[in-house]
Each structure stands twice: as structure tokens, then as C-alpha cells.
Length: 346
Image (cartoon, rainbow, N blue to C red; front, side):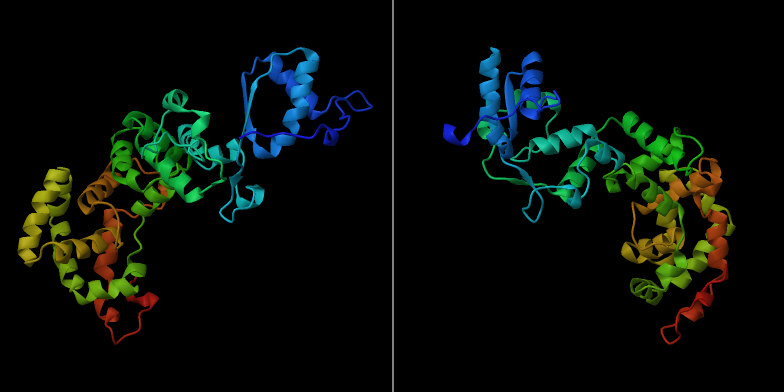
């Protein structure tokens, strides 16, 4: 698109203040020229500055770069993006847990695309594919939800060693684990990574896994359905399996041991599918939802035997969980009796 000005509107513009300090248009021209900048691509709000800078380039005898202007990045309300809409600096996004490659990838897609459905590009691919002709003329909306999602995709695409190191160090710094590396870290990252979009999310994910909010779960609306499905009978059989050492012996064998045990346990109770795994999830994890119940239970067993979890992490061990199960007064959860903190004694 061709842009022109009437010279009468330009005036005799200032390039240096009375105190000898040069102003923006003069500084940026000299700076770009001495760095041999070949293409100056800026937001459309810099259009008025371009003519002044072009005249300075000519006056000083510098080679003229190619100028291009792109639309502003807009907030969801289509106003100019600013601090009132959240983080705006690279440092802030880094502190929030965003990866550099995810930020570059997302920012490149604000108003540009390569003509395909692909949304994921490395820096090298962007350098190869980018052309100014494919930049949209309309302003692009900065979608923080999309950025978060994209960061999660980039995070999970990292080599496992790098991902384990990043998250392991985060857990160690947060005093959740005793060491930032090892088998427990590898297994925990593998289990939890699908629910982690930002690096700080990993703290909540592991802390949640180690917690045991059984009372809150049973007292919830969804928990009532589990109670009505005879979870107390499953609890009795589960306690027996724990007391006999059968459950822990199976978990010590890892996933194969769990699969063999849960198959036999289901046959014993004549339960399968959701009728088996939902009460087991509630009784073993204290939650209604979460990652794969088998992998979760095996990891919780390892957490209690490996010494990998820091004392201050708030981890409820298997011994403590089964002590809570042993003391539950199931009759207090009858639909005719109001639920109260006395339903479970600690």
C-alpha cells in the first residue's frame, strides 16, 4: 500500500534539543544505519516517523533501508495492547514460565502465516518461511489462552532429558522433592506433563498428586455417587489387601504388578471398568479425577519408599491414607445424615 504526505505538514522538525541531547528520530536513524539494518519493520503508529527518518538518512548520506509497517497487536477488547491487559515484557513472560521458542512462535503468528494449517515453527523455519507479503493488514488479537496452550505444546515436545531437568529443578527449588533428578522425577514428569502448560504448573500438579483430600471429595456432590455405588465395601477389601501386604507387594513390581493385582481384585468384587476404578481412585488418591490410576498409584508407592519427596511437601503416605480409611465412619455419609467434619477422624 502506498503512503504519501504533504510536505507542508512536515514542518522544520527537531533532531536535537537545546541542551544538546538528540531526539528519537535522529538517534534511531544513526543507530540503525551504523548497524547496517536493511529492513525496518515497525507498527503502523510509527508511520509519521518514517518520513522524518528517511530525510535524515538522505541528509547524512546513509543507504536507505526498506521500510514496512504492520498493524498493532490488540487486546481481546480490540484496544491497543498495554500493561493493563497483563504482562507485556519478555522478562515478565519468562518469569511466568513461558519458553523462548513458544513466545517467538506465537508472536510470529500474530498477523502472519505460511499459508498452511501449521501453527508450530522453530526459529530456523520462521527465518526460512517469513515474507512480509503474508502479513495481514488488520490488527491481530493477543490471545493469552492460545499462548498458554502453545507453550504447553512446546514444553511437552522438549527432549525428555531437558524436560525432566527443567521441571525437576523447579520441584527442588519449591522444596517438593529432595533431588532434582532420578527415577522418581522421570516417572512423575512422564505422568503429569500432559497437564502442564507453564513450568510453574508443575508445582501444583505434583503437590496435588501427593495430597489426599478424601473428606472433601466424599463430601462433594460427585462424591455422593461414589458412596451410593458401595465404596465402603470396596474400602474393606482394599484395607484387607493392604494389611496382608498383597497390594504393596504388587506395587513394588511396578505397572505389571498393579495390572495383575487390580485384575484379581476386580474379579473378587465382581466389578470392572468405572465401577472398579472410580472407587479405587477415590480411596487411593482421595480425588475423583486425575492421571492414569495405575501409574498414579505406583508413583505414590514409590514416593513413600524412595525418599524422593521432601518432608515439607505435605505428602500423605500410604500408611497415613489407610489409617484414614480405617477410621472412616461410613454411616455418617448416609444421604439422610448431614455431612460434617466428624465423618472422618484424623
